[in-house]
Length: 214
Image: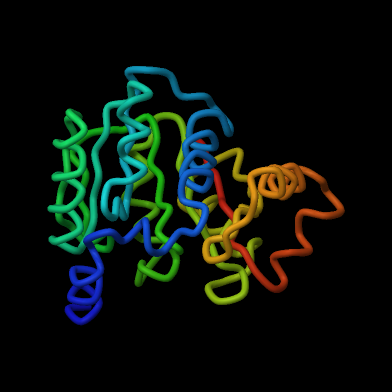
């Protein structure tokens, strides 16, 4: 784990700009799904982001009016996130912590883990989900790589076993590495809700998201 922390500490500065070819569209899509997929969030609600990275998505959450708490295991990423938010005149609660050992002391309306992916960074996903469950008021959203981590059905079953209801999934069809024109990105997003189409890309590329509600 120490070597992984060192890796992300070295990459912290400018991480999102380097790693996400369609970063504005990508992060805006994450914001919309957080707000409106399942039980909607409203201004004043609280959100906990596991794996907050360099704080790029945090800005959108805070500007929407959400009370934000970000957690990351890499100290330098938390430092960069704090600097980014302060420069934007935004306040946030940021913590250096490993999700595997995270102990929450307060509930949140939403918990999101856009970590690429949650199941790659949790040693015992069910145990982590069970600890999170009492602190989720409205919903939890996790990402999953169905080709590397575990099948979608298994991810759904873990959320259900942890005590979440209304568990469902959707693909996230915005490319991370290849830059595309906005019109094409919108076409891809429109395919996320087409039953006969949405599963096909996951055989070769893309991640999916799981949502559970208490």
